Image (cartoon, rainbow, N blue to C red; front, side, top):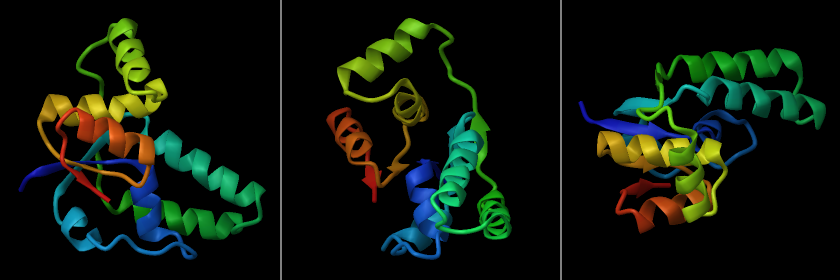
Length: 133
């Protein structure tokens, strides 16, 4: 089974009750999903924001977290521990260092990436990474 980097924006679109499901969702979810180690924190942050904005309640957030955990996303630590690598990648492509981790993972594993984030799409395509969105 081939690997695919999935970012939080794509994963959330797969489970959020008020979002349009991605057209290629079945293909994406049929792959071995990987993400940087920060992925669960980004999911938790999105859930917290959803609760604060009254988009859903805590019980619904718990259910959404359970759906996302069921995706069995493998968490990966950065291959390079040098902050300069992350700074350079993020500034070169106008990304946060957090988003640059997704690009760096796709580059290091030579695999496609699933995202709904326009900046990530642009950066990935500029680097020759296949993007599913």
